[in-house]
Image 1 (cartoon, rainbow, N blue to C red):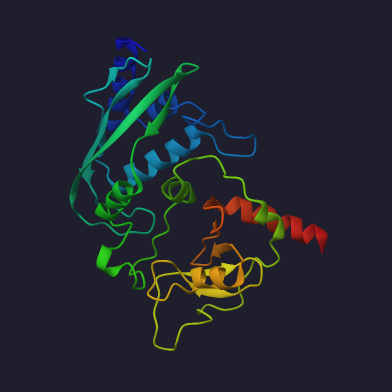
Image 2 (cartoon, rainbow, N blue to C red):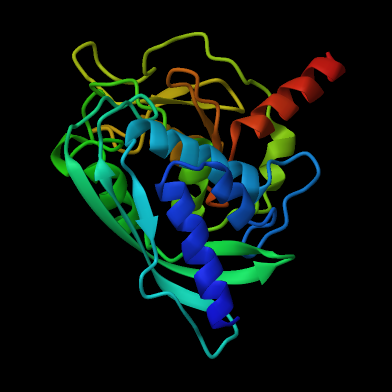
Length: 266
């Protein structure tokens, strides 16, 4: 990687900051930093372009730059991406905060067929802090309460946040799914006055329990008592899957694939 790459990357980010969304498609390679998507999976180009469009809609004055971007001894580019703007529109269901923001994210880039694969180097607590700063995650002292807005964080972001990787983790339990759709919108174990931010459904028996940020954590307790490791989110239109045993996260398309398989076996 050379200074010419630095100039190219910063030029494309400058174009995006000026309103040219196509610059992201020219910047981001189809493959992820450590993972090449399969034929039936969205590419990194598509994922990043989608996020770039969503962020631009929520913050029309959004500017992105990596002012300290420079080649490293490992043949890659390193720096801190700086995002600045005003949260003046809805984002993933979160209404505008009206606040100015400045977010810094350490990144590493490598070349991939004329474009760049990007790795954001954030630990989960740092990522949660960023999501909280733009209204996508409640304050820490309100995580156990029902959400005030219909925020749906994209599966891809949740997957990276929960597992630290883009690729699916191995999980033999997916073959044992028996139930995919809930028959209730309440926690099976909570009392009439209990509240929760979200519900999870066991994909083995259909038990519905409150999530891991709730006070009672009945979904996790169900796994511990029953040995059924797979839960899906049944909040709003969410359909992602979490395996407690393998610490594996699967996006909604995995649930849809399982449902198609079960329908074929019916």
